[in-house]
Image 1 (cartoon, rainbow, N blue to C red):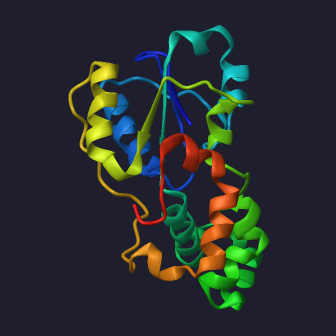
Image 2: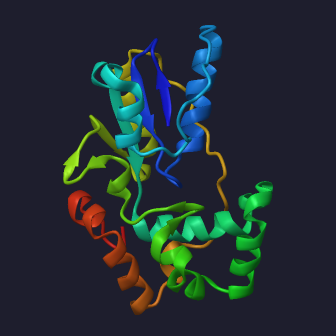
Length: 205
């Protein structure tokens, strides 16, 4: 997550939803204005309930936002993250070796990594990052699929000029739909059922 007492925002960083690009853009903005960045008391991918607990009353003063993504696309992206970028984290090398031994996305999505993890983080549905029980507790939920359009809305809400938003940790790969069979497609649908129902995601879009 990313918190600014100057602009009064909280960004909840759900893994594999363009968060690294957003962190970089916000970091450039802070550097331009010479705003100090304090030592974080929370993990980069901290869930909204934890951030609210840490911030206390400041939480209610902030514009809180997050990005979500089509779950079927997201899980293919997570698989490729393990095979590429995860290597920079020595603590994950054993897990990387296990995933490489699986040999395919089909095996990966049926393993614990596909059933209950998002990159190296434990979790089920994406809404776990932005909810307290059944209640969504952020103000704006943007979509990876309309990244630039929704990012412009965030910038307007923060009352800052449009910030360039590159693509970090992006891997060129085939269409995510080609990785699935009927069974694995249903596995993802069951795991991310609330996200799919709340935001109208379908396998083919």
